[in-house]
Length: 308
Image: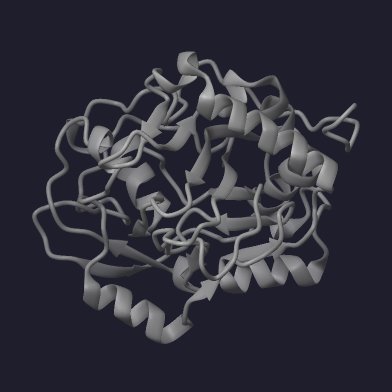
C-alpha cells in the first residue's frame, strides 16, 4: 500500500493544503489512439484542460435524451432509488446516477462514437464508465456545485490511481449565463490541490448534496484563477463539454426561471482501474464508482441515437 508520503497526490491528510505539480500526461499516446478530434482540438484540450464541441447532437437527439431524463425524474420507482439525489432542503431531483444502466437510450449515448472516441483518443486506451449521471438544476431552486477537482475525490474516496480519466457533459438544455452553467479554470488541470480535513466514512451521502471535504482552500483557488481565469460553458443544447479529471470546476445556483439539464459521463482508462480507497475508507457504492463487472465501452457503428 502506498503511504501518504509516497503518494504524489496525497490529500486530506494531517498536513496543510498544498499545490502539487501534475505528474501524469494530459493526452496519452500522443493523441493517436483514436481520431475523433483534430490536432488543433487536441492541443486546445491539452492546454486548457477542456474543450467545448458545439452542436454535436441534433435537435431530435436532444429531444429524445431530454424526454428520457424528464421521464426518469418523474418515475417514482427511480426517484426512490439510492441513485436519485434530491436538492438540499427540497424534493427536487438534483442528480440521478448510473443512468447508462437504468435507461437503454442513455446506455446507447455512452457508446456514441462522437463521445467515446474522444475519450479513447485523449486517454490513449480503451475506456469504461467510471460514473454516469443526469444533473438537473430546476429553475429558481437548483443549488450550486462548489469548486472542486473530481480527481481529488476519485483518488481519495475511490482509489483511482492516476489522472487518466475525463468527464463528458452533454447539454440537454441551453446553458446560459443565468441558469448555472459549468465554470472551468483553464490550465488548472496542471496543478493538484491537496485539501485538508479527514474524510468521514460514507462521506458521499452528504457530499452529493453539498461537498464539505475535498474542497480546495481559498488561497489555492485564487492562485489558479489568477493564472487561468474562469471560463463559463455557455452553449446551445446538443453541445458537449469534455474536461480533464483534474480541471477545477463548479457552477452557481440557478435562480433564473430556465432549468438546466445535462447528462454527464466519466470515461476512465482500462489501464487506470480503481484500487482500494485511501485511509481505510469504505468503498463508495457501485453507482458512484464502478469497480466490479465493468468492460470496455464499444463504440456504436451507427452515429444516430434516434432510430438507430
